[in-house]
Amino acid sequence: MFRKGVKRLIPAQLFRTIEPFGHLLEAMMWNVVEGFPARGLKVIGVTGTDGKTTTATMIYTLLNDAGMKTGLMTTIGYGVPENWHDNKVHMTTMATRPMLKRIKELRAEGIEWLVLETTSHALAQYRVWGIPYSLAVMTNITHEHLDYHGTFERYRDAKRRLFKLAAANVHGLQTGVVNADDPSAHLFLKDVPREVSYGSDHGADLTPHNIVSTPAGSTYTVKTDAGELHVKVNLPGTFNVSNSLAAIGVGLVLGLKAKQLEHGIAALKTVEGRMNSIDEGQDFGVIVDFAHTPDSFDKILSSFRALSTGRLIVVFGSAGRRDEAKRGQQGASAGKYADLVVVTEEDDRDADGQIIMNQIAAGAKTSGKVRGTDLILIADRTEAINHAINEAKAGDTVLLLGKGHEKTIERADGEHPWDEIGTARAAVRARLRKK
Image (cartoon, rainbow, N blue to C red; front, side, top):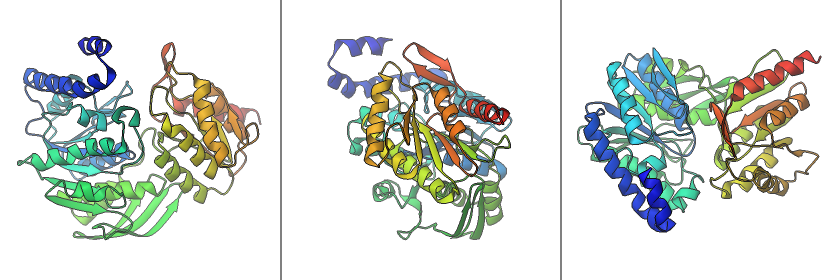
């Protein structure tokens, strides 16, 4: 409340400059009040533009499967395998006090390791002050959150703070696991004393071979210090090969054996709101995913373009009061790969939803889409999903992007309950009843 009052009284640029220090003071204060609950934990931080939640969940599953008592805090929720709590708000790394309270709950569960999905906002605002990061993981760095950070360089450098925190922790592993395919990889690698790199090339420590991808997932081999692994990933999309390599890199740093690595990656069957397949016995595919950045659009759409035997239909929007520059890029990517683009709401908040849809549509038009033919604008997300599913024919694939696991959708009058998977399932069932 105090911060909001100050924000109204001073210029926006000045507020942005001093705001992080207010968060830092809060983080210091709440750590003292809560008794520094993260002390003594071995914390693995996962940052990046895309793939954070999936990679963090892979690491969490891998470590627990190997018998290491590990907790998880991500966009989706927090907990341990026996006691999981859904995240009800649209925030990945919580404000300091609720984050510390959650860590105290996990400590009561007996965890020794914590996998913490860590955002650029949390790092830039010092909200994670007092968290003893032992190991840092970078998935990728692409266009996102420039509405807050202003430039790509400031966004990237905010994420680099995670690696610098890990390097400064003399009681930790002081190690970074980095995607060598990312153009910023060299900067992250130089931030830590010890590193493991993964990627398709670039002389990475971990490089996948013999990749076989299907709509159900991928298999591949990779040579490691623990021996050659034969890896099975149960999540579709070649980008999940990359995410699994990051998890394997963490496992290798922690000394896991080949069989533990293979079994731990295969142990993850699904991640809520991430590449979830809706199967009601229909003769076309329906996938729900949280993808909402231009890079994630390129990856998921290109993957399914290669895998789909029929048409590719995509439904998505773009959040209001967030990075506007990405909207045209999302539309251009969708227009390039999909046969039918259905543009709708995501979390318009108090922004004009028609303007947002028009911005996306402008990008799709640059890729050759024609409004009213293979480019459809439908403001209501339920109606948009129903339209896409009713348009699908045998062998087609419908991708529903942007909402994933989220339990609410934000409109001008506030938050409304939302269930993307449930809405999709209901639409498929209604379609089947019409036969």
